Amino acid sequence: MKGWFSKLSMNAKLGLLLLVLGVVALFIGNPYDRATATIDTAELAEIVQREVDHVAPEQLADWIIQGRADYRLIDLRTPEEFEQYHIPGAENVAITGLADHGLLRNEKIILYSEGGIHSAQAWFLLRAKDYDGVYILRGGLQDWKDSVLFPSLSADATPAQRVTFAKMAEVSTFFGGQPQGVAAAARPSVATALPMVKIPAAAPVAKSPPPKKKKKEGC
Amino acid sequence: MSTASQSIKPPQPYANPYLAGIGLGLVLLAAFVIMGRGLGASSAFTAIVTTGVHAVAPAHAQANPYYAEYLGDGTTSPLMDWTVFEVVGVVVGGFLSGTLAGRVRTGVERGPRISNTGRLMYAFVGGGLMGIGARLARGCTSGQALTGGALLNVGSWAFMMCVFAGGYAFAWFMRRQWQ
Amino acid sequence: MIAPFYKFGLFGDNVSLVMAFVIGIGFGFALERAGFGSARKLVAQFYLTDLSVFKVMFSAIVTAMVGLFFLAAFGLVDLSLVYLTPTYLLPQIVGGLILGVGFVVGGYCPGTSCVAAATGKYDGFVFLAGVLAGSFVFAEAFSLVDDFYYATPMGSITLPQQFHMSYGLLVFAVILMAVGGFAGATRLERWMASRKEARA
Image (tube, rainbow over all chains, first blue to last red; front, side):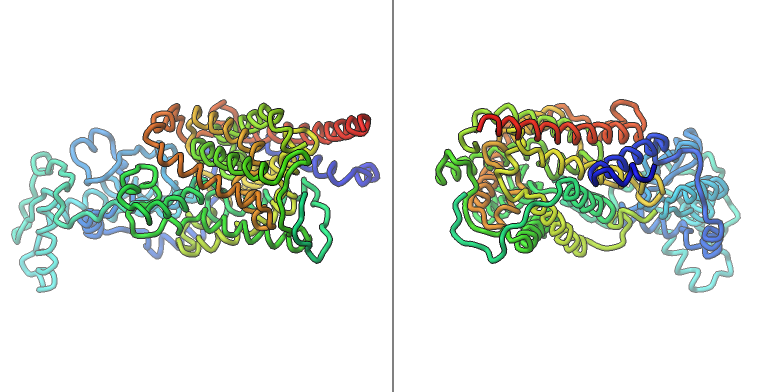
């Protein structure tokens, strides 16, 4: 049997190798198996502990104001909730539809949900599929409302906190929210106080001209 | 084939086409893995033309949507392009291989039944046709046939089959040049 | 998954240009090794006496295709990040036909003409000049042809997607076709050679 193989010309050997690879490919089918994933649990545990993948609401607000376009913001809630209010620039994707949504593995993806549970779970799912740039909005929409839309100041705030509040008050107005001032007790009812979504078209900071990506990749 | 100068080494026979092909395929694979793109050639020529036209008549170049794509926002030269650098590499690589194999010699490649001048005229016309065809098809044999072929790109496979079809169909008319 | 390296941000635009140069050297080297700096060898494909163009091209296509498939299957390369030129069927068909004609008339293609020029062939230089001229003519006449240029867009689509077959199946089919083609090509070359001898 071995003798037969060694008697073939080199070209024939190559051809045979190629056919074998072809048959293997045929059995593999599609390189990306939709349903299963392998994860390095130790690595993931580390990442979770270091909390490098959290984005604070204030930070996100800053990015939106600056007009940054280097990330994708994903809202994991229902379409009805999304209709009522969503963070400007967000895309509404159900957790089951994440794989098909066209997210690229080298993109920065920020997930948020009402609190943080769904976004954390979606983070895990994406991570398992080798998406490297996934982030969670810390505290979800709840924290966005508390810190950005309706920032409040407690009566015995430190000067540093007052400075922060002043800045957040500006930010909140930008997003159509309402700074709550000192008496933080009056929490407005959710239904009436949520602002209509204003895509900050008239952004105070001029949006940097869309990077004329002349990066041609064709021949 | 006329020769004006002799290289020092006698020309070596060409490599086994399958091995050369595998080598070429590995280069292409390297481009996929390193850059996430394939090879190319024809867009380098367009970049060069764009640079030239822009130097001579910048307003005209900006107004033309085809040049404008290569000019971008004007901050970088169209020559700072991946394909342009790659094509320069092709020249260097070709020279290296040719030197190692003793195949660098000046002259004109032609069949026995045509003159040098005739051959050069055909070369120019052929190049012109290639330039037009490659732009229409968004690539030439390197960018479309090789790269797109390996990626199983629909347009590239259609293109590749048409290249062979066109060549075979027209070969009879050119037989005096080559045979 | 860390490949394609550039798309994962492992290096920037300037280094990518250096990569382009190095990859180009490999490209040119392989082309010249195969003898594609010679117009006569290239054109012989169309006269069926030397089918190296077919052999080299398809060995290259198959090597890269198989390599990419298995790298993706092992989770090393993210295929969705590899650029796929969008398909515009009609202009690509017509462009291909024109290119085929240009090939037998001129004797080279843009890549091989660089190799020819690098090894001293004057017709290679003239061909290059022709490509520049052709590109210029096309760009200038662009407004006349731009409707055709953008006709029949199909987006970035692969054969497996178009025919709703698995990627692996297409890989297998292409390999079968290539191996069969290689065997047939060798036979055809021999037959043409014996015919030539018989006539001589």
